[in-house]
Image (cartoon, rainbow, N blue to C red; front, side, top):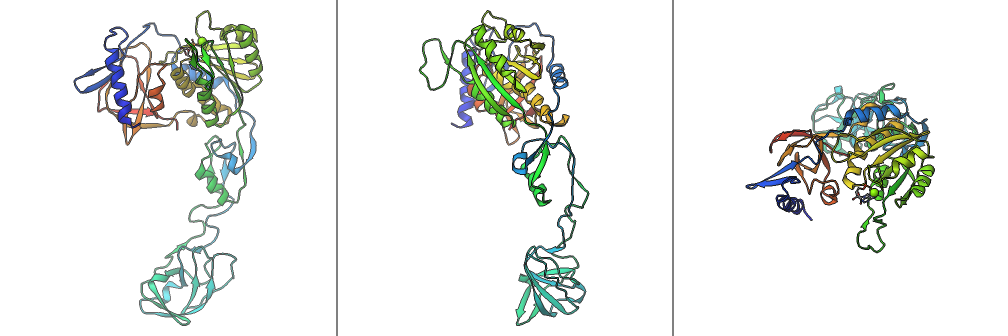
Length: 438
Ligand code: AMP
Ligand code: MG
């Protein structure tokens, strides 16, 4: 299904919502599709996203670092600064197949005596004199006396002589020792994310392992009587449980070891037992049951296991009934049951906390941001800032799907979030900053 279909699906949602005057969340004006986010409840909760994030980040401590094989260091955070122990390249070498020469004794039409060959591999400790050339291959060490290489294509071999058909400048086609990296140069800072490219550089330094931040172990607990595991038959009133796979995948993508995933019915003892077991991990992500209904049993269960509640309810849409607390050493996150709320609050609060536990520095806690041109107007009349889900492609951001907290289709087509602050009226065509997570 293309993004055109996704937009159509969104426009359909718009038309359907038009009849519901109070709950209308978007509408079409002429050909222009406009997203409008209406307040359901104008009373703003106390804690802002920034304040909640600051409190959470201040509350979690980096885990002790560990040494891992370079392959396992990707997407982890460096535990300490890494400096080059080796210059790169480690020796002057040829960047082409050709002849190593002394530039001063070369001109177009010069014939040089070929005195040997150096391939990539062990240095044969060869040298040349004026009037001589050495056959050399890509990556091979330069012989003593040579200061340039002439490409094979610019020469003609005549027996044990070579005819030069081009000028040669000193340094030409020579990769200088230390030209890329000099010994002692800083390659990686503590707290910086280790990427595929980073481990390639470290491998080129001869490193086979790296000190990275500690491994986070997490558990996922979902709650709700209405939820059925995918693969089982669905009865009237039931829906499939989709947050576990969402959260498990998001945790894994963050580099977390997910040790258990448990689903609980809305029964106090069952939830309490799951939370007690989960609290042995560094992080527990609970979904559903964190609101104020009679079936929202997570808060009392947390109290029963002796957890502290550090914050509850954040001024964000989707995602208001979010809680953060602590059960001994375990950071506890209670995410709303609505899948989009769970997704957004994970990105806003759980991801940065996990990254901090993993040793990330402050800059790495933020979601990556891009500037994009907004394709349709977005208005937010609500009291809470709204994270609009959409598709970022080639510098354009288009909201996708129904912008409600249960609506998974739009999220499934989205790769970016646009923060529409309360009261925002962002016109189509404006440049906006969107956050991404992939
Ligand atoms: P709750 O936060 O428990 O009040 O749930 C809010 C909404 O999210 C309800 O419509 C639930 O059915 C839905 N929901 C809760 N947990 C899940 C889940 N694990 N997977 C899919 N939907 C869920
Ligand atoms: Mg529930």
